[in-house]
Image (cartoon, rainbow, N blue to C red; front, top):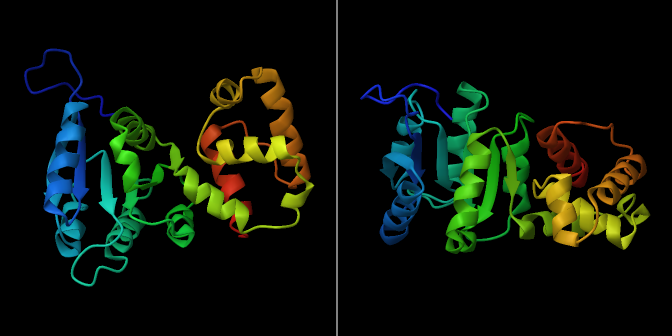
Length: 228
């Protein structure tokens, strides 16, 4: 979140600023309204890759919300523009939206290991509160991955994932979605202490070094799941 004061010097922080890239006009307008209803100012809403690349050079944005597929070829222009922007400005928060589960996109986005990234299916936008929470989490340096993307990454692995119990697999999946131990405990209706034990077992069985920071923990798990 930016910490500068608003133009009126009232003491209130300036709103979060976002660049939005979406080629479908109705969805672009809808996303703009959702973001602004959540106190996030959309400073530019673009519909093609060249315009996105230009918008991402702004130094007054806090996050980019980007469709993977943009004109002119509707392949991976949105993702490529976002990845290039993060190369020029390390740590630039980027939340990617996609129509389909494509784990390779998640891998590319996570390659820098710096966090402040997210990958959601467009269907998730229907849950406005959850979508806005994801935007804020990414803008704050966190990692947010769609549960279906995580499931695809998990299902694509065999050993040593086979070492995990069914409960540990559940915890691993929720961990990779970016949830804290407290959130996982609430979801599974168990104590946070029990989740701490499960996560320690997961790290031990997958030969992962412990990491206290939630974002680094997610990135470590996803790096293993993706085989890097």
